[in-house]
Image (cartoon, rainbow, N blue to C red; front, side, top):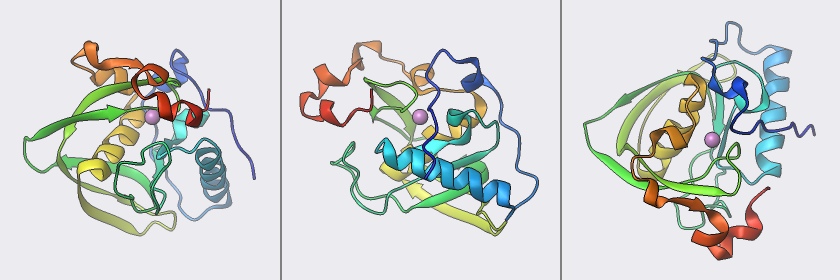
Length: 179
Ligand code: NI
């Protein structure tokens, strides 16, 4: 188990465009995924992108297969490794809901995202993935894939009156924060 340090907002490495993975099913890729899984689990995250541990590759993981204690009000999202992802909105509809990020500890904001998306990419063996997602699942995928283009959720906020400290907004969730 190797829990890596999660980079925090302000670190320039979070602002880069990530590079595509060129080789699948390699020891290096499996090691990266193990580190990401260990790091996400230790932080009770709903997802993690490789750039958050300083690795500039188009790799995200998300989902827990069970209700996440940081997001107890949401449906479980399938455990997924998604490599070299591409997201396509399925219609112009957006919805606004609360997000947090392990790279922005202690804060939450209401963030607009597409309601329904189709996402494609590859699993660790290089097998294609293609899924349609909506609601929280779609939100998590859009949030994680934003990390691959140097975007953190505060850059997507439109209404800054709905941006604040988790301890103030959601007192009961404070103990679950990792900072
Ligand atoms: Ni994040």
